[in-house]
Length: 315
Ligand code: TUI
Image (spheres, rainbow, N blue to C red):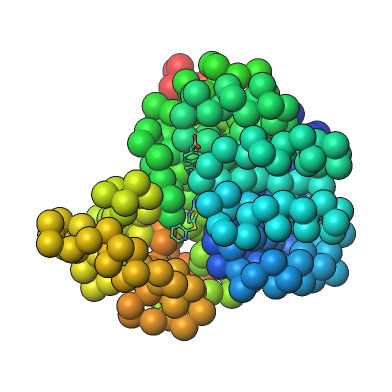
């Protein structure tokens, strides 16, 4: 068994957490991952604060195991969500796309384990000083909102800088990548894109099909000119977005308006004008299977690789 401080802190069997994917990570997926021995996460980006509250309650009905909530800090209702998770007695939070500083005191006072997703050493140190229980170091291979550094460079630098546990994320979909993350200093891993192909993931069938068809070169980062880079599958929508960004006659407001609501359209309607957020590993995701099979394939496979490493690499 891979030894990990994270399993003790979070009360989970395997050191794997599911990405808190906006609009995607609902009670169905989160409970399936938690029931499989990992940590499932419910996303706070959904049809409003009360819809998220309902998903949290549903998740509690579907699993008796620990699960968490991911808070997207740039969402307009983030302050409301931050209070609601305390009311609901949520025990574990991850945060993304900003600094959780304004909320840390209240969450810690409520006894919540707080795990910010960070994309730099500076923010890792800042959230550690604020009392974070662990960090997710998320490299730019990941889907959705991305930072500058990639996992191979980010993860060891964060692991060297902080004393709290580090969860590696970005570019992890199979046992080899998981084993590499542990060697780079991770205490656990976070997986997003591969869970899009979980049977329990409720995204529109078109989303799953696009992931299954993806190749190594299928993703693109757009939104850099808006200060909000996002990795998604190359589609007519994301290509048009990129062209608008390259055209000096198009204003930021026009680009923003073009992108508004696009993720929801992809997830719920499978609309071809949607934004299909996915990581660079989308090309490695080739089958639909239960979340339990994904968790066990990645973790048990990583254990095997790590166990065989001395004979394989050292003769
Ligand atoms: O948050 C994510 N990934 C996301 S959020 C999201 S929702 C969305 N919806 C529509 C359009 C665009 C996005 C989709 N994917 N990952 C966690 C993450 N956080 N990655 C990078 C960061 C990050 C970046 C900068 C965290 C903190 C940060 O610091 C800023 C600061 O305030 O210092």
